[in-house]
Length: 221
Image (tube, rainbow, N blue to C red; front, side, top):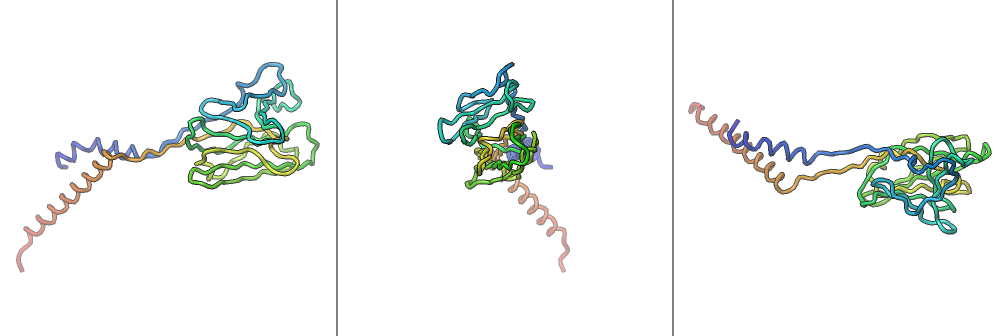
């Protein structure tokens, strides 16, 4: 191996690492909202939890968020979040960065009579434009269930929890345990590209030297 190539090997490794994909997983719960003896508690709108923001966007009156806790008949074992007054719940990163959601825990409210159909719609705004939608339907025997989202939800700028029809997320649904992947892709900068270009030139030069040496050793016909 040439002396020059030995010297730039650490730079090559750094350049390739800079182009790699990095992702970190995170579980968002609403346990921190619980207070003993509380029932249906109205949350500040918007609500910031760590790097993420939850807010309601719409409704027929003042849009609010509600956390159902131990003192509420709608409590299902842990604090959960929902929109209210027929308003959707919206989730974004506070810094506006792209993120992904792999699964969420959805539940219908406990006082619904069995057989009542509901419609929960999750809609993600894609990083490159457009939206992706996933619909969950059923009756009030759903219970607290973890549902997996489509792969397209891995690169979104916002996530809406809503639905259509008389019974939808904003009036009969709650969300908890949101599994998030905050992903970032590092692109090689000018120095990295320079190093990779230099490697290509050295490789071509070395190959040319091999070809010339081979020609010199060939016997004339």
